[in-house]
Image 1 (cartoon, rainbow, N blue to C red):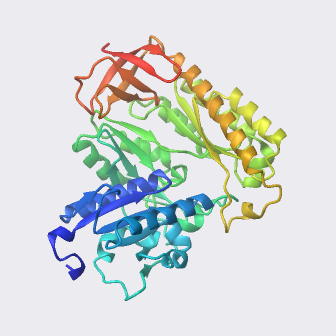
Image 2: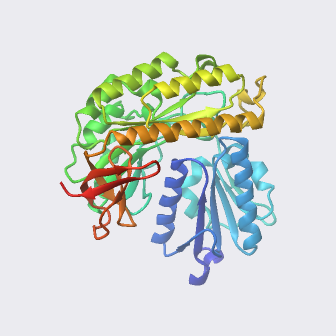
Length: 436
């Protein structure tokens, strides 16, 4: 081992993941690798000998937050070494290299090699930069699995994206869509089940683009193979593009007792002009069709959505259309994001940028709408049974259709799946009684 880390005392590392769940998963997997080599993995606010910051670059504010975290690590522990990876490192390595205290700048192509890279001594007075153009291969570098918490694990099935939405730079930062073979994923899933995970989230940058590089199986084909593995577990899909919720996928999910009745849709808007300017592939009629089919085939399914508020040319009238459509659709919650310019994307140069105060006002309107719709959605389960995975606190858990339930017992084994009858639905809380 390099003299950089030649004592047990020096081998401590802290991680900070910004942005998407893929970053969080990758950071957790990297932490597991460092642990396997005998390193102490510490909380980010403690003094470590190495800080690894997994950055986000979806928006300009994401870049700013990444820089703030880098400087915070440097300020609070000036003797530590700092490695910066992730999407911001991929698209702006020189910018990050210019931040005082950064020792390693590692692009997404080399993220899985961070343990090996940080064994190297950086050049004197400048960081070691390992960044290259994103791999054009359609095969992912390797499976990434990790525990999100003690009751829920993630399995990364796909990375990258083939589409170029005008607000997004992820297609540059992550490269084209590429996937892992079904056989590799089945082996990884079996390992997660064997060590006791009962809920596994299938994740990636755009999982609806999943395609086995060997057999060309799509997401439905992957689910068909994964659910053949015996055991007491359930699979949950992360976000999906509305255009990728196919009839075949819906039919399979509706007939499966191992795939959660849960859809998180990357809608981004519900007004046709704005969707067109975003270069999205769906329109409002598609949203009605997809949500209607989900509700018809899986009446109790949760349907959530990502919505960007204040996109350029989203006039008050166009926002009103989005609001009315979302109010009309059978949504159970909304994840609302205020639009922020991202340098290097077409949308950053669009005319008719929406003023910040108006963006915030619209964001608050949609948050209030989400709260109301979520309350209405949960009310339909009053008196009904759901299956809840018991979380760390042991008196609460998550149902298959994404309802956080406060349980009437505290003696349940963590990570067990228990039948629960919903007894009370409050504005901010759902309560249930354990048992048939």
